[in-house]
Image (cartoon, rainbow, N blue to C red):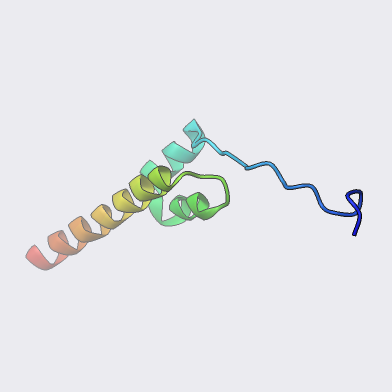
Length: 67
């Protein structure tokens, strides 16, 4: 195999959580939080997004069963 035929390593994709995605996650987390699983989003962004999603589920269940 020659150097010309070896594939070049792809540059790391780094995505930032934009305003529209933040707004979507805040208003409709059931739909938009899954976007964070795409390649390039940081583990911190995923943790915050899915943590918020989980907190809303827990709060919703507590209010439903507590009332």
